[in-house]
Length: 302
Ligand SMILES: [Zn+2]
Image 1 (cartoon, rainbow, N blue to C red):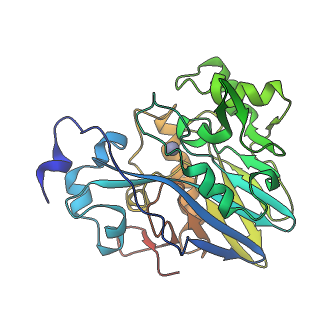
Image 2: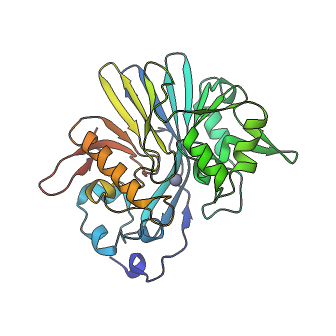
């Protein structure tokens, strides 16, 4: 383990572009299919995002955690969308960073073309866009800047956010997302502020998970007796399955609530055989949470 992960002052993130392999990651949950479309992977000191994820904790993680860190202990933070096909519905969960230059993570202008190619029918075919929360790396491609105007990227979609998230962000827009990424949707009547347990169809519903943000939601997929949970930022790293007390202190609205949410979700996920689809988990991104002799762990051999 190098000193890199133990700098007294965490390094700024370093962008590493992971070439998108031809075999994009996909999963089947009963009759529902899910595909991951990658914007970027960022290599960063774990403590840049998770201040209590110390060098010692990372070094002590078993072999299952290896895909989510570099050999010298830097965290790999993936930013990707999930494209969900449920019956006739096409749903995009989170829209990544976007065409912005003023954030701590940089987006990738080529992302929209990759996303369009990953969606049967292209961007026009998207029925719903779910924003798990309104941080810049989840709503960035809600819109695109065209001739000086922020224009919805998915022209026929209803965009869903929780009421609590919209209220909280309107009251305190810490990341400056309203003007480019949300207001253009409100002006065109394309945004629905819904309850945090809103049901989208018979297979998909939102799961209240406030703490990281005021009205954060996860997305539960249930079909044919199978289940999968899209985490949003309730978990930033699979390391938090083993150490759920570790929180994104600087980014959380309420870290105590974020930890309570994580513990509650963990209780539901451990040995429940639900697939966990991590919104910021690097490849392989998905797994099942298993109990261990001392700590829970993430089984990616699904
Ligand atoms: Zn995030």
